[in-house]
Length: 231
Image (tube, rainbow, N blue to C red; front, side, top):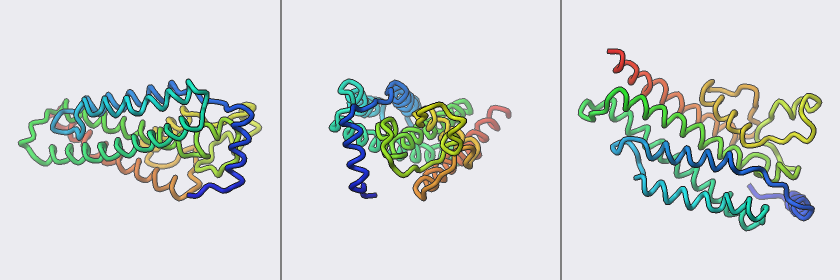
């Protein structure tokens, strides 16, 4: 979606006054958790080897750390945004491949996966699904984290309760990473919107995709693993 000229001017003016930087440690922690979950899967299930996951993690953490160290210089913000989106795309492809491999393992008795391996793998896929969508939601909503922190006017993808009832929210409240993590978790758990409502078509489609991955993981993989362990 092209950025309107007045929106670009608003961003430049806000950054010229001094860019407020959202803390990056929750994002770095989430990235490390995703990398660990992708690497811990059984070899016959995972798409990427541990060393490939490690290299990808280093390439992503560098621009994220660069934003904090440079106090939000434009070049680092652009690198971070591109890196996070590429990471989410790669993690999403890996999650779908891992999920298909788990389904194939269930249908093929020769796969040799135990109930414990199926259960831990399903938990890893479910958690990866939540974490990667939280990163995507955090990066895309209202123009990104620094646009939100600096009150740059941008069309929201989600309506949070605090924006619907501003008199009940803290002064100067803006959605931060933990809010998008909660959004991703409730979407994967309830399979539907809860207190945060999607406003745009892309937000609705992404929530549908996350819910579908979570539903398949819980219904097919986790239930089969529990059935094996209980027999």
